[in-house]
Length: 215
Image 1 (cartoon, one colour):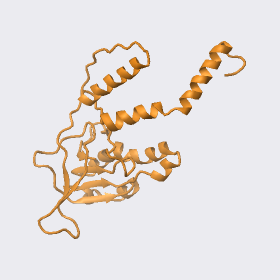
Image 2 (image 1 turned 45 degrees about the vertical axis):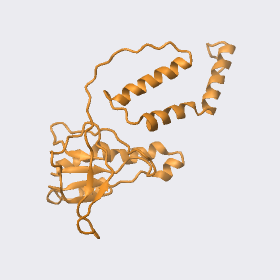
Image 3 (image 1 turned 180 degrees about the horizontal axis):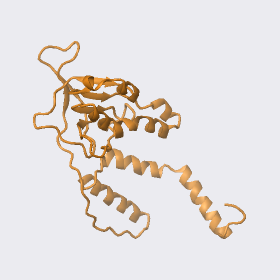
Image 4 (image 1 turned 180 degrees about the vertical axis):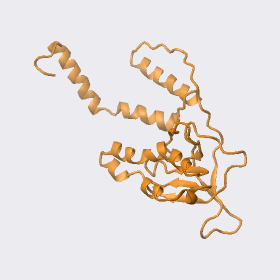
């Protein structure tokens, strides 16, 4: 607060006290942790989204606020069954396969009933992908294998680490589709130790092909 503030000294002291309390408390972090880990993914229209609204309402009422909920109608996307596996790979034991933990991103296009089976092309960056010809990509599954920088995140540069990796989620599938890929996989945009894979939506280009893809 500066000396020219229009607030009274008492109000300024209260505001400073609130600021200091907020900076020294883990209350906000614990609320976010519970919403993300215990309630989990909260897609619009889902049971978990409704549970999150109810949880926040109860928390605010416990703090003494008067809370009123209003009904809202939204278009929503429903996550279906998710399954992925390696069916052919180096060193494979005959008659076996390996499951992959995968989560479909919001607004993703469903695969056909029988799924998709195709060779995988692995790229780490868009520069690597851009060097591939259309003939190389066509009919394949593209894996954007760009890692989340956990060291940067631990050093307090979480936003930088996220921005560096999330572009493969938002842009990757559309770019793969332009070269004729059947589907796209995107490495989770989060620490390797996370129990839940990071999900979000992707950006389809206007008039462009929409891929069947998973995370």
